[in-house]
Structure formats: C-alpha cells, structure tokens
Image 1 (cartoon, rainbow, N blue to C red):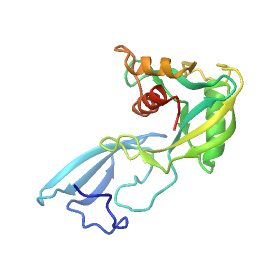
Image 2 (cartoon, rainbow, N blue to C red):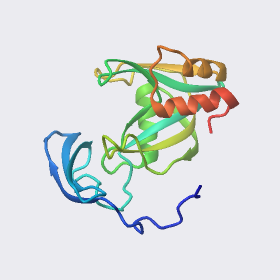
Image 3 (cartoon, rainbow, N blue to C red):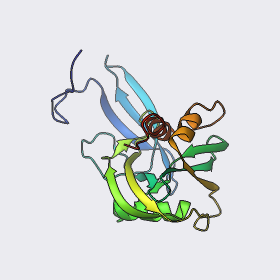
Length: 207
C-alpha cells in the first residue's frame, strides 16, 4: 500500500478534463451548474452539481476561503460538549449537528464562528482550540467547503437569536450520552457530528 502522495497540488496529470461549466439556475445563495467533461476513457459526459459560488470552484487549484463554518463547542464550565437538534428541510426531519453557518462576504472566520454560535445557541466563545483548513462537505453534489472550528464556550443556552426560519434546540452532552446518540437507531446525525461524537464518547475528548 502506498503512503500519502508527495506531489504538490496541481502536479498530477488528470485523467479527466473539464470542457465547460454552465449555470443552470439563478438564485441568490445556491445554484445548479452543468459541467461537460471528458472521462478517463475520453468519452464526453455531463455532471450537475450545486454551488454557492459563481463561478464555481471546479477547474482551479486555488484554495479559497470556506463557504461556511462548523463549530465544535465545548462548555468548559459545565464540562459538556454542545450539540444542536435542528429541523432540516432537505430531510424533512430533525437532525443532530453542530452550530454552523455561512461566512458572510468580507467576514473573518473567527467573526463568523462567534456570530453563528451566539445566534444559534446563545453561547459565547471563550477560547479558540483549533481549526481545519477548508474541507469539502459532499463533493459528489457540491463544491461547498467548510472550516471545522473547535472552541471553548460559556453562558446559558438560548433561542433568542434564532430567526423564524430556524428551529434549533441546544444540548450539552456527556461522553456516555454522545456514545448513546451515535448508536440510537432513530437519531439522524450530520456526518461530521457523528465522527466527533464517536471520538468524544470513546475518549472523553473532543479532538
């Protein structure tokens, strides 16, 4: 088995080639794009995906700032991990996840983290632990990238910052509760949340 690739980004010879990218819809925050490309055997094909960017990122090696932040908050005063339960229209049900939101134009990641955590949970960032580079959420469907940020926080949970389009409940969980949630048959979890909760449930640590 090979190790981690040592070539620099852009140094690989791509087997597939993007020929064109066309915008299909015209909405403010999210659009559908159609990509025409040649596959690894030289056949012409079409792929459709969603993007928050116009133009989308495909076809460039430049790493841009993230579209959104996902916040992993640990409440130091209560010694609990903070998660939320939010109604998500795309699945028509409630999903367990972490506070998250779009980075506004010209906004720094740190400012976005503080704002989204306060708006969704009423909690306040007290210490920055670590952050990831922009990583991709579901590259088969979208070029959306997020930065995963681990923080400590303080305060009491509140829904006062929620908008009319948000239905969010905040929970502070122990490692045992996190492990149980990971194994609950009917619970719907965001993939990033499941990964963090599984580590927290097994080790008592968030990272």
